[in-house]
Amino acid sequence: MTEKAPEAFRTIGEVSKELSIQPHVLRYWEEQFPMLRPVKRAGGRRLYRPEDVELLRTIDRLVHREGFTLRGAKKWLQSRDKVELTPEPDSQRSGDPQLLDDLIALRAQLARALA
Image (cartoon, rainbow, N blue to C red; front, side, top):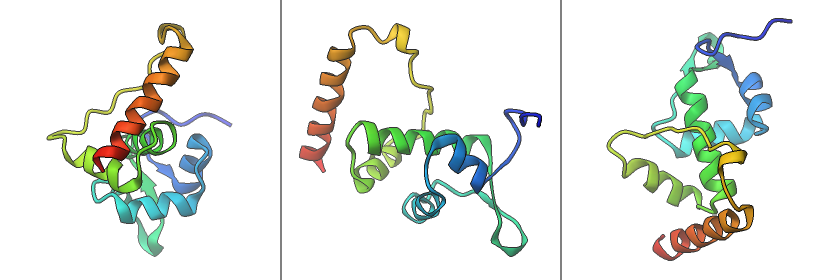
């Protein structure tokens, strides 16, 4: 089976598998994050654009790695004039893993304090 082109639209099943996020979670996030709007075809079938997939990666990172609540992640994303979606740094360039873990924990702590 050939792999889809990076600019191709993806189904909810494909996105779910690619990001390891259950489809019901993706549908729930659509309700919580107004900027996440996949194309809906006849019968309600969702097609995610590449920018939707990158936004989902960012939401996943904020919520599951950086400790944001959904509300906090939504505020963080809305506070940007333009959501800057950048890929995560290569693990080889991330430096000391313990320092990175400490910084992520500190950021999550600050996010909770400000929420």
